[in-house]
Length: 427
Image (cartoon, rainbow, N blue to C red; front, side, top):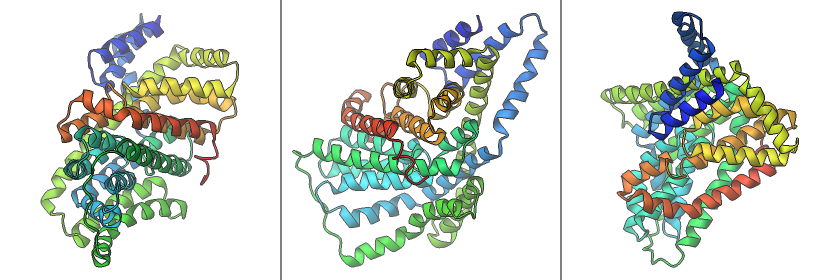
């Protein structure tokens, strides 16, 4: 009885446009009321704070607010403009140069922000108008920016990997390493497809930068280029834990903004901290309600039923299991954010994956890469909405333009799914 109630209520709330955290929370409460029938309401409700506290008090999740803060600081400090200027000075004069600039800078900025929508918002304001100015269609420019920004949850440091690591009890450092090759493959695939689809357009080339201009732009971008190296080098050099690296990234961003670039003022701190706190609250609220949802599934033994069903359907074949998992993740990614999907599906699918001999690091890379595609998949890909707002194009136009890019991402997903050596290359 509990299973149909929570899934039906979740689906109804989701279809009417209720925020995902509310969908998870309310449907879980319905399940708790049915499960606790005959017990006092206050006894049932006292379980909520215990579950919420248990879900959000894990030490590794402390990395989330610090990575968010570090990304907001570097964005406010003007790092995105400096990265763009440096990339343009290197390849902006070549045919397709702006495509390379957009994708490469998005991949790099993703290593700072750890967020897809934040990457699209920070870079799109500059790069989408620049693409349109030289002759690229607005819908295509916005679609490419949205797709490139999706690497924000794949390329380390990734908030989604932190959440997966906390649920799967897996090394976050190794998860970060597993995102390097898939993220780079997505970037290369997007560049190739974007150049092919625009090969017949008459594009105005940018003037070639002199050696002096390139050196100047490199010096200005240097401190931003150094940040991912400090974070990842510190983790893999044994200097930081991922949580400590997240805190170091925030401190480094403040240092660069105040004393190197001198673009940050004390008055900017209020906006930075408010934005960071708001985003963190959203992530943690989703984490809490998704954990409650998972708890109810476990109480009703639905997790075991789903696991047994998956093993029966796939016949214990890991190829079929990964195919079914990918299809489910793709569909889920179209309707919910990556954090919610990771928190809901990891407890359901990971035990089956482990029983079939699939590496949890590999499975995490597949899941996160899959969910990143959901950021640009209609009808509710959040990156598409951000791109629409910047380029002032309709959702229909950007959805058509993004289809070839999604196909490229799906090809990369299949390679990463069935060639585990790719995500595990540096692990």
